[in-house]
Image 1 (spheres, one colour):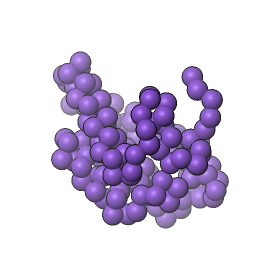
Image 2 (cartoon, helix red, strand yellow):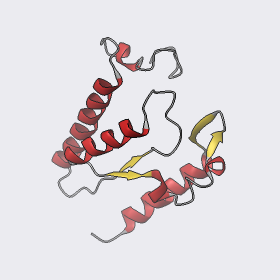
Image 3 (cartoon, one colour):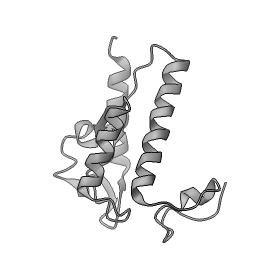
Image 4 (spheres, one colour):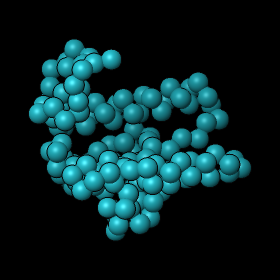
Length: 132
């Protein structure tokens, strides 16, 4: 457990938590791709028949991270090249992009609200219940 918040001025502050120095956004994206890819690989190694989904929250503003639309497209492409198929959140909640305020905590805090989480959970349950 650590004190602090994700809103620290240092955009890549989480790196300090594991003893690393801050990096540029390109390095952060490559590291995130590696972590996600390795996590998926480990799940598949431990549970060979597992079906996984990586829900990619890419529709709200990422201006607080300094990632442009092009950066996000490159990150998504890199995930695909690493064998992870990112599923955009609007594939889970089709109206998300067009009715953003219905699904976020506040216009100043674009994290998903309880309604969005319920819809995501319903999507996951539908996927779990599908016959392989």
